[in-house]
Image (cartoon, rainbow, N blue to C red; front, side, top):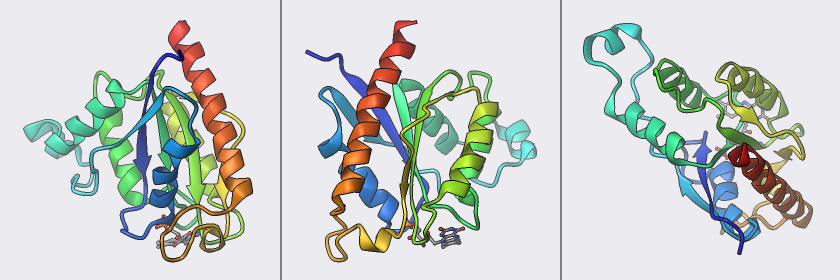
Length: 189
Ligand code: FNR
């Protein structure tokens, strides 16, 4: 039987009807055997990063919880929209907070990316900015296949938000299988 792999998902959209969150909900059905998913603790109530807060009272509880969840995972999948060609502010703020921790939770953590957007590029510009930031955080960044769900409004059922587009389901399934292998190789080191 395949070894269990605990994957933490971090969704960069905060809205209820989010396509990216709908993509997160699809992952268990497309995952290889043994891969389980947990959604990250919320990060939308974190204050904007300010070193004065950190100096005065340490890391806020929401930041500690978020970091602990990353540390506890075998791998992380970030599923997020692109805002103005880059990383949504709330998500970037969470990265900024945990990046200042001594036991920086993303260090050498296997991380894969997915994005869904209403436009034709599917969040690709954001993903390449995200790759820059995550490289500074010393993650082990998964390469290909990349997941860009473009024109998301045509790929999810408009009432149930189920991912109905078969080619998208296929590529997500391929990525998850490859990411599972990637995590195993990192763990074996
Ligand atoms: C967007 N959207 C967007 N789309 C895109 O492809 N490139 C972009 O740069 C942006 N910029 C952007 C900024 C802001 C502030 C918003 C609210 C939206 C559109 C975006 O892809 C669309 O709203 C998605 O549906 C957002 O993802 P969720 O919330 O459905 O997961």
